[in-house]
Image 1 (cartoon, rainbow, N blue to C red):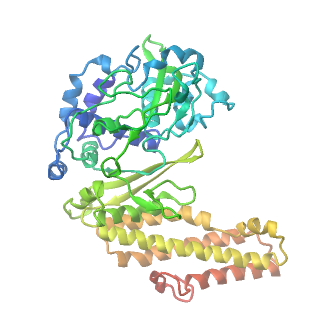
Image 2: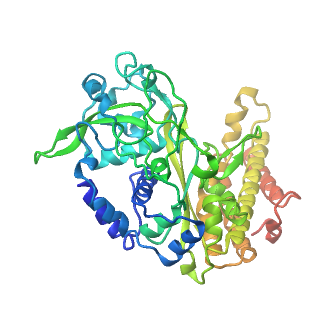
Length: 499
C-alpha cells in the first residue's frame, strides 16, 4: 500500500501544490524521504548545469514512480517480520518486555528519554494509525534528541543501545526551497551528483551497509551517497502492529526505540543547506534554533548566503534566472528547527521567507534593515520600561527589580506582532517593490504598534499624580530613544514623535 501511494505521489508531483505534515519537522522528514527515493531510483541531476536545466525545464519525476512500481511489496512492508521498513528487527525479542506505548515514537509527546523517569503516558497503548506511525518514525530518524533510551542495554543488544545521539537534523536549522509544486520543490532540493552507489536504507537488517553494533559506541560511518544520507536510520525502532477492525494491520500499539546510525558528515557535501553562523565565543556552526530569538529574524542570513553564492543550495538558487511579475516568486525558503530543553522537545520553530530569483540583494537589504528597525524599537521599549520603573518604584528592593521592570516591558508583545509586518515587507520586495520606498511604511507600522503595546502596559497604573508621572516618563523616554543618534536612518521619517 505504501509503495502504491508513493507511485501515485510521484506521478502527480507536478499537480500537487505541496506535501504537508502534522508538524514542520514531519514535513521536512517526508521531503527528506522523497529526496532519498529520487536518488535511489537514479532520478536526479548529475551536475550543476544539469540541475539548472532540471529546474528550468521542469524535468519529470515519473521515473521515481516507475522504479517504485517495480519494487517488491515486501521491501515496503512496515510490519515485515524480518525486514520491517525503516526499522531494526533485531529488537523483536525484547519488544514485549521493554516496549512502551506509541507515544514514545512522537517527539512532541515523548518528553525526555530518561529511562528511569516516571512517564505514565508512555504506558498507554492507544493505537497509532500505521500511516501516522510511519511519518513520526521518519521524524525521529531525522530530528531525534539525544538522551538515554528506555531499554535495558545489558539484557538486550548491548550497553550502547541506550545512548541516543542527536539526529542528523537535530540541533540545527534545516532549510528547504519550496517551489510552486511538489515536483518543483524536489528538483530545487536535489543536490547534483554523479556518485554511486544508490544505497537506500529500507531496513536495518538487510542491504550493503555494515550496520553498527551496540556493545560500544562506534565511530561515525561514511555516508554512501545521497540516498543513504536522506534515508539514514537515526534510531533503531521497532513497531508492533495491532489488527484493525477489518482485520488488517492498520495500527501500532507498542514501540521500542534504541540508538541508531552515526554518520560521518562532510559539511561541504552533506550540509548544503546550512547557513554558518558564529556563537558568542566565536565558534562557527550551522544556524541553530534559539529560545530567545525568533527564526524569522534570521532571514537576512539566508538571503546573504544566496547573494554571496555561499555554496551548495544557495549558489544554485543564485543562478536561477530572474523572472518578471508576481509569478517571478518561484520559491520560498522554509527554515525549520527543533527547540529543546536538554533532552526534552520544547517546540518546533519555523519561518517561511519569500525568494525571487535575481532579487537576493534587495531581499537581503530589506531583511537586514527590517531587523535593525525592529531591534531599535525593542531597545526603545526597554528604555521606556526602565524609565517607568524608576518613577513607579523610587525605593525598590534589589531582588524585586527584575519583576518590577517586567511590568512595563512591552518587548514580548512587540516581537510577536512584528513578524507579520516583517514578512509583508519581504513579500513586497520579492514582488518587485523598492526597499527604500517600503521602509517608511514599515517603520510607521511598527512604531504605531509599539506605542499601543506600551500604553497597554501602562494601563495598570492608578489614575493619580504618580501614575501620570510614570506614564509621562515612559512615553517621553520611548520617543526620545526612537530619535536618538543611534537610531537607524529609517527613523528620519519620524517628526516630533509622530509617525
